[in-house]
Image 1 (spheres, rainbow, N blue to C red):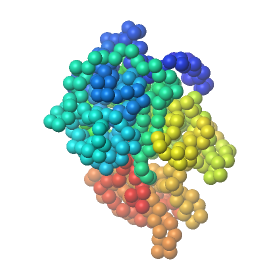
Image 2: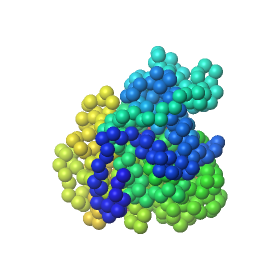
Image 3: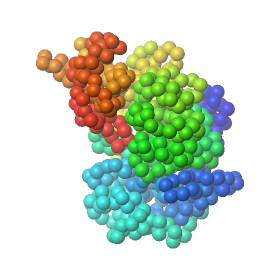
Image 4: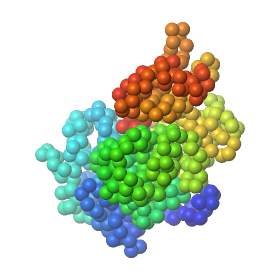
Length: 519
């Protein structure tokens, strides 16, 4: 384990991992061996489970996979709703030495067909409510094994297989550099890519962000609205709490504001992981009970940059702070973040100790502080590449560096300001304009719930900003009112020439706005 004092001092820690290392043992079995087996590890919709109970379930899950013919290094697709079966299947596969592939639960049959074929999964474990969407994909992959959590007349019961399995108590002899699991990128600009992560990567995110930034402790209760299939949610609701023996709250329901408030009121989390859209929706609802957030120490936000006004309003209403940060599927979790006691609203904070950040020009040269450019990151939790995609791997991973695709401004005080995705930037009148800056200005209007800005050609064929706006019910702001509002806040050339009112914005299943669809 990492020396926490060095992380908190802002120094990259020096870690000597044992040559033999299995992440499932470190995250789960260790607590049982060290006398914390009776501590509650998971609370889900059906009950509470101690570390000892979860470890036993995980051992049987590993046995069930072996019984289905899964061998070390073979892929196991997991398409499950959040609940205790999820970490048991995930860590069971890792303990066996197999490679779980976590798939988004909100995809189409075509998406699943692509991912099952691409990953060459040996087995798929699915929640019963998702099984119908998977049928075409399973039919397209002859020989794939299937097990279902719940009731499906034509598929074996995963829970029955687990219950009847001979447990595997001795973990596979893996190393920190063995591939442990895959996460697929969102695929918002093309086919999803399988990012291959190592056993050591989970420990690194837990050490550098979970303990180094969040300061997570064994008595914390963590609830993440972001689900386990999402890199951000996997860290929040599994890696971080399990790394210290804390408790994770898992809910199978979609994280609608009413659901989130119900879960928070019932289980009183101390750390909450959300996304900007959800924080905005929660703030738009005046009815949520104050006791739901009474236990919070702080919240985290990722997925997209958090507008300043949302951070300020959340603190006014809850008396707690949101730690805005940025991470990626490729880096596994947050590498740039605001921290407790060191928050600059409107920025993404500072580099998480243990990660290096640089701004690069189009030719790859390093830009000085005070510049705006493409953000590159270097750190120990990077995936080793994309499965069967050499071209995209070579363009994204350059030596030890990862190109994030985000545009940033480096500030003299060491903070970093988000400027948008590199492929979303607009050139208006020869000057670069960040859609995020215009969106933030629009979203600060009291009548606006969400906004997205893209480039649109005027009658002369010149690109100008166009805004798509979701109003906060029952607001009735007009397009002209919103244009004037932005002109008062930003330089004149940045205001949206067109404002279109919509009921919702197109998003990926992880909550990111799909601006290419608006374009």
